[in-house]
Length: 314
Image (cartoon, rainbow, N blue to C red; front, side, top):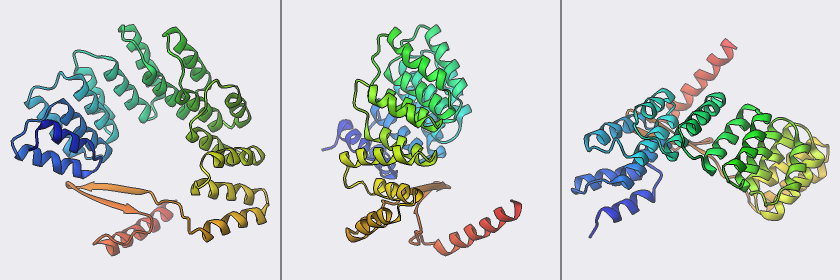
């Protein structure tokens, strides 16, 4: 027999519209949602960018008297941010009476997500002046904001500031620094930093550095890093493709062709990404060259029309 705990376990296992279907079924079966239920469902609304659902959840939260639950309202801030409504996220934040670290972090993430690095940094100073203790997540958000805005000196400052709060940087914090230096074209400096670190970086940090090497035409270093990544993940198809591109850029056509032939021989392909859109409460999913949608013909006609229009306006 299901109870609130089992419903929450089921709902938390999904990050798709299935979670919302389960939530509706939970309500129809007479079960009352708790903090865990609301947080999970609101988070799914944000992940799927279902603003109409999110607003309905916001109204429901007030209706059942959970508007002072910081965990629920933190997820509400994140939901509005993910849906692209930063002003609504700010309004939720400003109307809350009690801001704990999770709430501050949610608003910091919202600012950073919308590439408002300066606003995020200013918000951090408001947070500390309010007497709230920052944590590892706080500084990870700050470093990410700096990385996306090219604020190298600020990033170094906040990395060192962690010591004042008795926080030891984790691999993710150093990964942000590597990403920032790579984005700024300082790939050699980023590689030097990696070699000096007291911790092992996650593979995605190496991948970001490799991408920077490719963008900034540092192919020798890129080849070295690609070899290192493939030592961790020898079957990484995306990395093999990027390595092949680096060889091609260096004029090493035989090496590039060898990698492509190996991929073809082993029937390996890059996994396709997927996008979705919500129209009047109906979610439609799409992947590259996907023609499975019931209105695929109309969709591709409209895309062609838009492409022509874009070319005409330059």
